[in-house]
Length: 438
Image 1 (cartoon, helix red, strand yellow):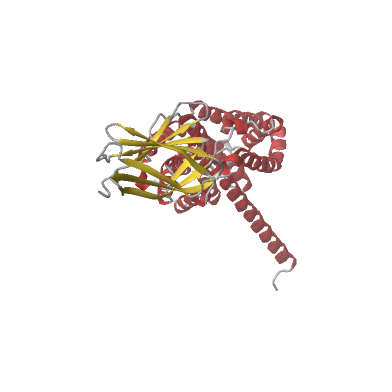
Image 2: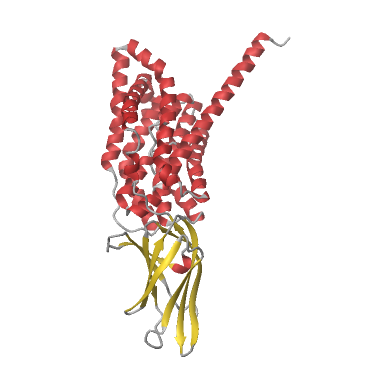
């Protein structure tokens, strides 16, 4: 009879004081590696195709390795066309344990093991009272109100650095923009999907990484292009173009990869957020272009303060991201951290490689690389929060936060290395001037 049993887990969360059970997914229990529990009470429904030889002769035995993390309250048997067992569990504290489920049948005085599924890992991540958007409210509003004018001023200063002649050149030779779009909306999502399958991440987390990989360039892209001596005008144009293309490509990639991952449900694309992001970039930049043409003295002042202002905003952005993502980064495991490091690194590498083999100038190569590696992860965050139940959304939200933090740290290390290298070259050149070769 062994291997004739077909079991499927239907995970549904039961909140205290609620009788509602939210449908998540059907999983083949023999292929299940990790179950994530986020509520104080959890229910597992085990469905079996096994039929009792005698009425109520079969029963389910549940064993937990660590009773401090998870406890079995009851195992209830229900009969219909198939034999169902409902396992009620209570979570005590965060942690991991292994779950073993055995189906037995009593034949007279003898008991026979029908099927056994061993060592299903259960990770308990009890849901906090603060949801994602409640967590963001923990940030001092005074800090945001203080730095919002600085962000707008910084974008306006970038507008003063734009060379309109560069726009004409890009219009005639749009290869950098095309390369950036291909990397952001085709190559990166596929690589993200492939890596999540290799590392066998849960479906929700895998979708979070894929959605992060299909995001357009982030607003910090042209900031890093400036600090790394890339093409600032091209960076702003690429960011605006990719944000506009995201209105089409993010829904398309969401639909394709959610089906490939076996996720069902309605996906909500934050069109208003995408458009507001675009306007948030274009409006102050356009003001900066006007200032440059009509008030050149003011434009010169803005160009002088753009570098120190950019450094301040960069560090503040990394700090705020850490503070917002602290709750979701607690359960990060090695696989998630590895992907968080790989995603921006791949984007940077792909961008620089394809721009280099296309024989583009060095500043353009730097810009294409930055646009491929610095992503607007918070658009992925909006899609995840709007499209999934809170437990799945919290699990998937780890991806964009991890990528945002890792990309910020990686580009900061590249910047420090670049500045140190440039400093060393200047010192060597000064020494040569003082001591010319005889």
